[in-house]
Image (tube, rainbow, N blue to C red; front, side):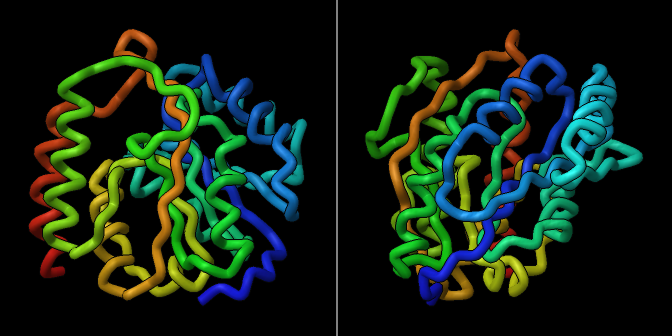
Length: 236
């Protein structure tokens, strides 16, 4: 288990067509006092809306951050694999490039790590915490069902398997062989962490969800694929 001696945190941000939010998001991420050394790793998954131009400008403004660019759209899971390779922190956390999650909550995920309790920490939108935007009923039902089905396959008692905020100690990520290119990443990484018998904690987080007009990308098709992945990664 982690001994709590955290030297550096890597914040990995997969980006796809987030021109309207990327600068504000990065400003929020950079404004947080994490209490440890930190770095940002950005991976552009072949954005076509001008996001890449914004990232190129940001790269000139922030040479201390790490930037990677895919030459074709490959999906969130593929972007995260690229980011994990470039991350050099003792801990690695995933941050979406929209404004649905509050970077201040990353400190909540850090706490069990700093106390030496956890190897992996998930955020949860369903166990209290801060503000939560009221949005789609069926999305909420779908998320809870997928988490329940995943728990049945992994023998975990998570409340929010599909959440963005997941923090890993480096040894955990180095032990995993990840293959899912899109949103099936969430299912795969959960199943493989469970199989590795790592110590997992959950903490409550805020959620400022957006609707499809505001750029939300996940659809019912991703939910169907997640169901398949839950069965697949029970055995793979």
